[in-house]
Length: 377
Image (cartoon, rainbow, N blue to C red; front, top):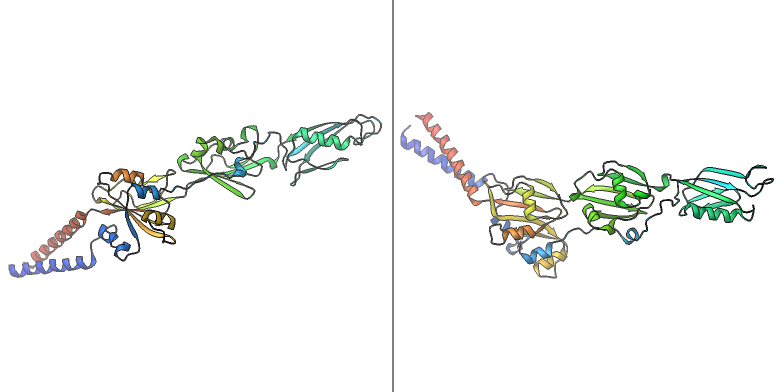
C-alpha cells in the first residue's frame, strides 16, 4: 500500500468519524444553553425562560406556612388531676349512722368503692347516686356531686375521691422520636414540648423536622424549630392526641455538571439556589458553565402572572429560571432565589467541554487509523 493510499484511508476514516459525530452527537449530561433557550415560548416552545433578578426572587419566594388552628392554640392546660375516660377512681364513703347505713352492712359506717373505671363516655355508676358524669371533673368536683346525690338519703355523708390515671388520659407519640409509645398526661407532660421530652426527644435533624398533632379529626403541623422559637406553639395536650414527628418530605433534583446528580431532600425550612448547589458538592470545576445554572419548575398561575406582569394565564405554567453566577450580582441572586419542592436544578456544561470531547474522539480515531495503516505496511 502506497503512502498516498494510506493517507487517503486515514482521511476517509476521519471523514466518516466527523459524519458519525454530527449524526449521533457526543455524550453529555443534558441540553446546552442554546437548546434550553430554544424551548422558550418566544421561540414557539412551551416554557417561560426568565432571568432571575430581585423582582423575580420576591415574586417566587414561597415557603410552606404551617401552624395550629385556634382549637389547638386556645385550649387551656389541663389540670393534672382532671378525670378522663379510662381513669380509675377509688372512693370512700363515710356515713353518719350505725344501725342502718345506706351502702354498708349494719354497723358498717365506711364503704369503699375501688377501681371504678370511667367508661368511654365519661360516666361512672355509684350506688344510690346513679350514673354520674365524671370525665372533665376534678376529684373534688366529683366528690361534691356524689355528696349532693347521697345527702337526701343518708345524713351528712363524707366522701373522698382518688384518681388513678388510666389509658384515657394518654397521648400517642410516634415517628422520629427516641421512644415511641403511649404516654399519660401528667403534670410535666401537659404541653407539647414536655411530651416530646418525655418520649426521649426528637431523633432526626431538628432543622428538617416537622411535628404533627391530630385531635378530634383535625390536624395541625409546625416546624420543630418554630416550636423552640415561639412559645405560643407549645400547645396544651388533650387525651387522645396523636403526635407524629416526621422528616420534611420536600426534595429537588440536581442534574448536569454538578458534584452529584440525584434527588436531594431539603435539609432546612428554606433552600436557596446557592445552597442547593452546595448540597450536591458545588459546580463541577472541570465541566460546569457558571453562566448556565437553570431551575425548572411548574409555577401556579398566580405566581406566573406576577412574574410576567400578566393576568391572563390559567393553570400551572412551565418556567425555566436562569442564573448567571458570573454576573456582578449573580451569586447574591442565587443566594436569595428560593428552591421549592419538586424543582430541578440543572447546570450546563461549559462550551469547551464538547470541543474537548470532539478532539479526544478525533485523536482516538487518528491513532486507530495509524494503527490500521501500520498493519497495511
